[in-house]
Amino acid sequence: MSIHAHGQTILVDKFALGGDRLVRRLGFGGVQLCRKDGWGAPKDRKNAIAVVRLAVDLGVNFMDTADSYGPGVSEQIIAEALYPYPADLVIATKGGLVIRGPRDWKPNGRPSHLRQALEGSLRRLRLECIDLYQLHNVDPDVPMTESVGVLADMQTDGKIRHIGLSNVNLIQLRQAQSVARIVSVQNRYNLLERGSDPLVDLCHSEGLGFIPWFPLREGHLNQFGSHMECIARQHNATPAQIAIAWLLQRSPNMLPIPGTSSIAHLEENMSASSIKLTQDELELLSKLNC
Image (cartoon, rainbow, N blue to C red; front, top):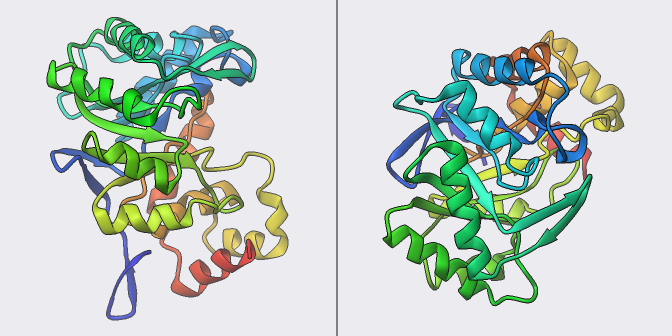
């Protein structure tokens, strides 16, 4: 949902994650700092570091990564690029997925693994406490309450500030909320993939952040054809920029994290925050996926 007043759409530029960490709503996702498909170190590490630094220079103060990106590579690059960190920078990372090769991900939500994963992230990021630590994926072999319960224990130990979830449904969210305070949900969501619409609205009503991963669905936005092209022309923008603008206006709790290894694409993505879609354009884009 967008916020409306006197017939106009109002964009909320910032969101208080967990009620106390103020982030600019257009963030940066760290998976593409690695080699293709999240596996291995980048071919050009200096470029990856430059991209991260430029993101902060362009106003990003919310960065999302995971221990399984690389593995460990994305977290290391963020620390190398930015440590000592700006005071307002919020770093979110995740544990609970293990990568064994390109696109080869396996869930591991065992408490012992999550403890080990958190310690590794703290070490690579050079932090004593993670601002937002997210269960990366539900492990079908481990009760949700056990996985989230150990995150709550580590929060009590002062190693996690806030707890989030990734790749969950409503039932799993409620199970997690029975043992810990959850401040965010990160699911696959974009103009073409809207299965989490009910969760987006729920996050809005309950004050949780919603972090859409794969927000651009690279290479597939042309499925919108002439309608998307027409809207993009009206704003002197690219389809990708329109897709980001739509996400930002979809809900004031939406925190898109488009990632890239390209400085040009980063600059393009960040400029999307200045695009103000009309109500007619928002409704047309929302209907195109129906």
